[in-house]
Each structure stands twice: as structure tokens, then as C-alpha cells.
Image (cartoon, rainbow, N blue to C red; front, side, top):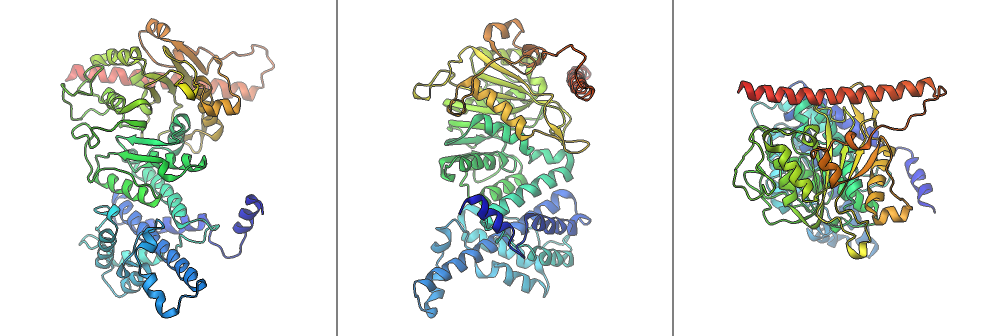
Length: 537
């Protein structure tokens, strides 16, 4: 039976819970606590309980599989319990072992009798003790004086209505992974600016992954937030018939709560990543000092003014970053982590492409002259709900040669510039996303320029497109004083001056151009403000 038909039939089965039903149920659960605590608190509560429910559902699902397998093999009923309590039968299939007192049905029944907070904290503790990869990760925050135990009991009841198994026959892990990502996005929106500390918009993450193509190797993120870069990398591998263990994940996160979220996110997706045993500041204490990564994907905090700076740090090979802005500290740290043929994609504030104050222009020039910069992409405005600062993506490559059997295009001494400022679609009044068409256009342009295997397979060839992309030589970049703003290189799109352009198309085109000018104006205003602050200081 063709897979497409089978999927349609599965989706149509009567009584089967839909993903929308599950998400709606769980978001109602979040609302139960919304009025009694701030967004950061209820995020920890709800995600912790959702994780506990998922672990229990996945355990129960595996338990029934074992029972069915043994019954089919003719194992006597009185011997089933010995196998059902064999930890290896669960962990060997990627399922966490759940001690009896932490299983959801038992937990929910006892919670109705009072003090659910103590029961949940004990359950979290029992699961962490039974699963080494979860040590110190799960929240034990439920049995505190400021927690309304009545509301918590209602929350347990509501989450009990959600099942992570049975959705179009998808594994519980895949279902929870989707729910977890949905919740992270919802909570990031609820927390506003602070949400940017742990969440990067999905379309931006997909752009980095589609360009870098992390088929296999070591993947690193020095400011990993809730682990979204790793999850998208995993999805890319699986979508290309790879396996989860084709990539090895390394990361670091400075915020304790966010580090815990990332550890849970990786556990949910079956990724055995090394996020270190504790959270830590990447500049103050690099937890992976000897790592040489094949791929780095990162969205560092924009224009971070308070950071652990040491002038004699060996990472500053291309110049000492200024004390009041960590942009070029992040870029140099990331370059220092690349292996011999490593590549990186880094989301940065637009100012990093053109700033000259405090030595930043010299550092940028040194990175360009070292032939490390492969591609610069100017992003459209409003992709980030948590900040209005215009953004771009730096793509680095340690080796721009054809690399032998890989048969890549020779790109030493060249940089690809892509102006994507007019791309994207508004999903509401304040937020834009890059569509699948947008992502494909940008990624295909890069791969055609680099001559990758995927480009050859698709029959793609590169050519400059006025107003969108341009391959510049180092000599051309020198003439622009090493400013890397794509608009300087791609020029203007060829516009037909005939009067037969549909009025609707013309208005849309002119509107996008106006927004692009607004963006540049905002960037220049930011530069002026920074200079004035320095004078005031």
C-alpha cells in the first residue's frame, strides 16, 4: 500500500486524537497557572509536567509492546512481570525507565488525595535517579509554599486528558517533540523580549540548517537556548535517510532554566548531546575547549554589552572585541571552534556588517582577508518578535577549495552576498516568517554557488541576479572598505519601465523597497545612539 494512502487512512480513523486537540488541551493547562505566576514560572511548571506525562505514556506504550511480543512467543502469564520490569527492555529501545511511583496513573490517583506537589517532586527525583541522562535536569519546584496545590491538582487532571500516543500511529517521542516546540514558541511570545533568550524563530533555524546541510559530524552551538538548532539538524538528517547518531551534538547555555529546557528537548528527540554537566557562560568558561566542529549553528544575543572579556584571550586571533559589544567576540569564538573543513551559520545584528567603531571594522576586515567569510545574507525585518533590531546571517567556511572528491566549486577569494530583505510573509501584525519558497531560493542560491552535491543533483548552476545575489571578489570588498552589507553588492533589481506592470504588484514592490529603507534608517539610528552613549559615558 502506498505510504501516502496509508497515512490518509490512519488520519481518518474515528476517535483518534488530533495534534490540534492535544495542543489545545495542553495550552489550556498552561492557562490554569497563567494568572497565579509569571510566564517564566509557568513555563517551567507546564513543560515539566508535559515531559513527565510523555515519559509515562512512552513507558506504557513500550510496556504493552513487550507484553504483546511475549504473549505471541507463548511466555506464561506468571512470568510476564519479570520481563515487564526489566529496565533494559525499555532503555534499549530509547524509552526512559519510569519507577512505579512516577507512573502517571499512579501519580494522578494519589494527587487527588492531597499534596500533589510533593508527589510530583518525588516522581521527578525518581526518574532522574533511574536515567543518568536526566540527572539534574527535571524541575523539582512543585512542593513550594508559593504553589497553589489546588490549581496544581487541576493541572494534573487536565494534562491527564492528553495522550502522546496514537496520533496517526506516530511515536510518542515525535508527537511530544512537536508539542514541545509549539510550547516553546508560545512561551517565547508570552515572555516578549526575554523569550529571545531561549527561542529562535523556526524559519530562521531552518535557513541555517538548509544552507549548512549537516548530514553527519559534530554540530555545535555556543549559546544553544532550548536546543532548537540541534532539533532542526536532527530533522534534516532524518529527512535525508540518515540516523540520529549520524550527528554528535555539543552545546553550552549560560541560563540555568534554559539549559534544563535544552536537556529535556534533546532527551525528547532522542539526541544524546553534550551540553556539559552544568550551565555556564561561554566567554568566562568554555565547556568544550578542545572541540573542533564540523558545523556551528548559533543565534547569539545581539549587541551584548555585559560580557566576560579578557584582552589576552587566545580566541581573539583577528582583533580584541570592544568591551561594550560582544558581536565580534561571538564571531571569533565560533571561528575558533571550526574544524579544518568546518562551516558555520551565525545570526547577527545588522550593525556587525558595517560598524567601524572600537576596532570592529578591523576585525571584520581581518576575517574577510583570512578568507573565512563564505556568504552574507541580509534578513527581512520582523522575523524576531523579541527584538526590532535588523538581522543578518554570517556563513563561514574554513575551506573554500573543491575539497577533492566533494567536487565543490573553487571559491577562494570570493564571498556570496544575498539580499533577502524583501522576502517573508507576515503571519500577523508584528511577525514575519520565511516561507518554504523563500528558504529554498536562498539555500539553492548558496548551494549552486558552492557547487554542492545537492545542487548538482538538482541541476542548479549559479549566476548573479541583480537585486538579489552577487559573488564578489576580495578586491571588490576592499574597495567597499570591508563593509559586508549585501545591498552594496547586489545592486538594484532590473525593473521593466513599461507601464503594463499591474498596479497591485507595483504597490507591493514599492512597499518592500520602502520597508528596506526603514530598516537601514533604523540601523543608522542604532549606530548614532551607541556613539552618543559612549560620549555620555
